[in-house]
Structures are given as C-alpha cells and as structure tokens.
Length: 285
Ligand code: AHM
Ligand code: MG
Image (cartoon, rainbow, N blue to C red; front, side, top):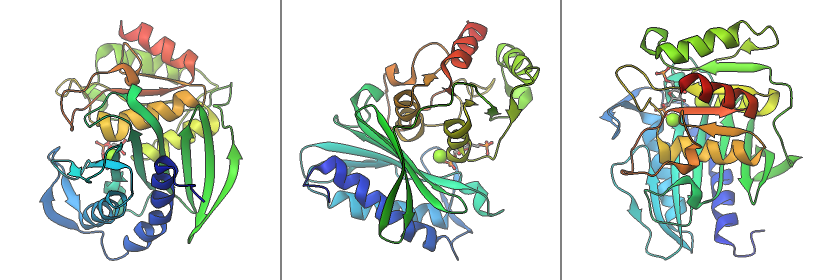
C-alpha cells in the first residue's frame, strides 16, 4: 500500500518493474546498434528497461519528469512534483558474460538536472542470484527481496559495518592519477581489506553496503570527471551510502554537494566508510 504518496508509489512501481526487467534480459543481450548520450553502445536490454520504466513512471500522479542515462532529454510527465532519474540497467556490459547488474534510481523534488541535496529517496535493484532492492528514505536504509509482485522487507535500518572489508576501484590503472594510485597501494597493503570488483557499480557498491569498505570510479587522466553520471549513478548511491552512515566524495566534497550543469554530467565517485573516504580525500589533496 502506498497511501497515495507519490514517492512510495515510484518506489513500488520500480520494485514491481524489476521482475519484468529481469525476465526481459533473456533474448536481449545483443547490442542495439545505437549509442546512449554518453557515447556508449546500448544493449537491447538497456533500451527495453528504459522504455518500460519511462512508461510506468511517467503515468504516476505527482511525477513531473523522467530522466534516464539512456535518453538525451527528460520526459515531461505532465504533473507538478517529483523528478525521477534512473540508470535502467547499470553494468549492462555484464550481460554478455551473465554477471551481476542493477537498476539505479533517484527521486528528486526539483527539476533535472538537480543537486543531490534535492533527493528525497534513492535506491537500487540488484539482479544477483536473487533480486533485491536497497532503498534510502528519511535517513533510513531498507533492503527487500523481490519475487513477482511481492516485496519482502529483510533488513530495516541498514548501516555500513564498522570494520571495512572490501574495496573495488574502476578504470584502467595507467589512467589513474598518481595520488589515487598511491592511495590504492596503501589500501592494498592493509591486510584487513580485500579486492572485490565485478564491473557493475551496483554489485560492487552493494558489497560495500554489506561488508563495509570503499568503492570508487575515480577521475582518469583523459576523463577528469571519471565515467559515472551524477544524476543517475553518483547522487543516488551517495544518498543511500550516506543514509547508511557512510560517506561519499567527488575527491574534495560530498557528491551530494556537486552542482550539476547538464543532465548527463559525470562525476568522480568514491563511497564507503567515513574513515576510508577521509583518507582518500587527504590523499587527493
Ligand atoms: P553503464 O551504466 O553504462 O553500465 O556503465 C556504468 C558501469 C558501472 O556499473 C561500472 O562501475 C563501470 O561502468 C565499469 O566501467 P568499465 O567497464 O569501464 O570498467
Ligand atoms: Mg550505470
């Protein structure tokens, strides 16, 4: 039941769509012969998930805009109210090898592009061995298991474990800055931490939420804003990790403080336990 609250309704619609998105992956693993606005080749499943979510979300009362990593412009949904930004299939290059992927969403109370401070809720679906949803709202993070139309709460009030265990950093090592590489060597030499990297941000960040640690897709030599997109990826995961008691950083400040210029802006992403993000910011100074 959503009691007519549009934020709850958006979350419910995304949860219900996840089963269909997952089912729709079969037979849609090939490239779609098109590029998204970031210049990346789309998979057929990217297009399918985007169209399904655009259709469902834009018909919710109280939604003003739908924006997606997979489309250039936002969709005007005809109402005042919320703006919903999604990465319909995060990590879709994992389709080929049949590895983990996700769906990411941010619900903003301002028109897109909006800063992370305008988020009222965010979350992700993880298509792992089972389908789960992590959702942050009003400072609380909850985890659900999804099966068909059923959403079962399995964890309420999730916080990052105090003792971090995992780290995973994206991008090619030769493309990292010297400062980021030096930070990585320090992390690698800490024998309480181990490497976990799967090439889908949601899979990797979900491990950080579960075990504690740090995930990063940093600035690269030829891409000073990194790879991940602020509206659809950086802000939603930063909001959730911060609600779980962790920190986020673009290298100098919380990702939620970054002012967007464009819907498809990129941002260097670092999220995890406070202590590791503090050390990272010191290292990048
Ligand atoms: P996508 O949303 O188009 O799939 O791209 C984002 C993904 C992230 O999930 C992941 O962290 C990163 O791209 C991996 O990039 P790369 O393949 O360059 O290592
Ligand atoms: Mg993505």
